[in-house]
Length: 312
Image (tube, rainbow, N blue to C red; front, side, top):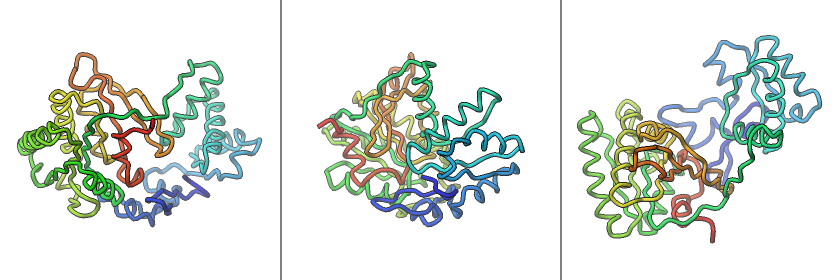
């Protein structure tokens, strides 16, 4: 959440300011050294920025306040501590957008509350999204994260009897080597999962084994995981895959051949989605459920929950 312009993120059972977060402050690609979003974004845009703090979000003049900021050619950073804060900001932005176009950049909360607002106004058909994850017999996790929390999640899965295959970042130095790595991964996964086990592939366990960004291009790792995902789905008819790591998971979806993502389940407890890939004509991908997980997201049992489901 963002409060008084500073962003905070969960780490296990704790919450830390972003520049003091054990994982995000030392992220290998995007280390967060500043939690004040106004100061952080000042390094990325010449546009002036103004804060709108929590007390302002529920004032009757919110739309007018935002309109005044925009009229000066500035952008704004809106706080959001609870869902009601986000909903208030979204309603004001939607109201102003009908007068002139706006550009908004946000996490999933903006899209979630905008969709809910449109449904209430009858602009779209309201659809009920499931909130309970159904169980699957086996789960494959493909992890490119070096977050400490993700490392804990891998260790919990191993302790539960999952197969754990380490993907050496050095083996991805070239495209040819990367495809050879896919062959080795598929062979190892086929043996383990063919025996009925769930499995996790990882490049690092937390900080242990972390590679510099130039050593493991995120797009190449994403391509490796996309091909591994396709081949394992074809071989074992896997119903669900978890892609862990912000950069690698997004590239894996881009390289998967999918055309769209459909939200199948929203897990309120861990604030994550089960999505369904849409890839007409691509049987190896179409209909596959995927969970895209940031490295620091979720409790220690995240992977176990993703397999066992939450319906029981």
